[in-house]
Length: 421
Image 1 (cartoon, one colour):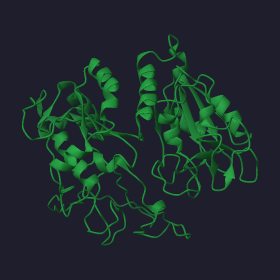
Image 2: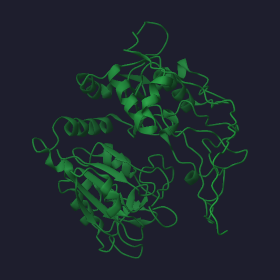
Image 3: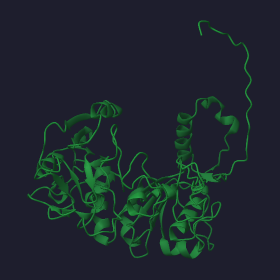
């Protein structure tokens, strides 16, 4: 065509269909927390000036607790076992000093009051994890904003979401597999109250983008903030609480400057864009990056992480109890949860290559990790000895590592290239 055609009018036909999602309207919320949600909503839409036309604002203030057989609701809910509940007293006291309405609700209480599992919509899921989601959905409507699932898979049940990897030909492309690697533990389930995780009624939950009868309808826009502390005993909770209180109350014990120092380790045979990624950090953060072009022993990486950094970035191949800094053919190539551990038959070859060797007392760090499976606290096999990296960093050790880590429970994803680290 060698001409330009001007179309002066155009017509669109918009076809609506009924919304299958249930409106989980919040009845009560503090004025402080409402401002948080309003800020998020403003950032999500293109026309924030019109929000007030459609928004149904909850009653501002906390609903008075009435002595009934109903479970209590809090703006910050801790869900844990009755055995572990007393060990969170110090943490709860600190959060109350900060002005939060916080409380502990035990799994046994939830199972007793919600015996039919998750009945939020559709077929539901009638199990213990479903019961917890049902309670949290009700808590959300009464003003809950933050949720701490305080326990590993043996304390607070896990929900897995079914997935697959497009383009693979090694088994990872199989849809609706019941295998461990394609059913990652995800606490997104416990923060989504208007998605349907079991549309098709099978034993694979949270499927999306299949474009077939296997699709479920999870909602990736969560209603609350949820985190999990993979603890299973009093000592775990004590270790974590000490680190968290120092980090929040007096990081660095008078010298908090380390918090703006960030260390990055890029493992061999990975595909990243660290110089681009770092630009998403605030300009006040300084960066030290060890690129994959220079190989480092595991013990060298541990020693470097110990050197006054508030943020640690792990961009390496991973396993439940280690991540890899050098190629598979090299020696001294891993950082382990513990320097006496083994990963898939490869055992620590040097001292100082475990997270137990860190010595950053009072200068605790937080971790952002793209490594595969370092967050797999629920790993069921014996070919990766001991506990996972996420457990080691947060709860296993006294006065080292740090209070929190963001990590993958199964496969991670790199910025370019195929597969995950």
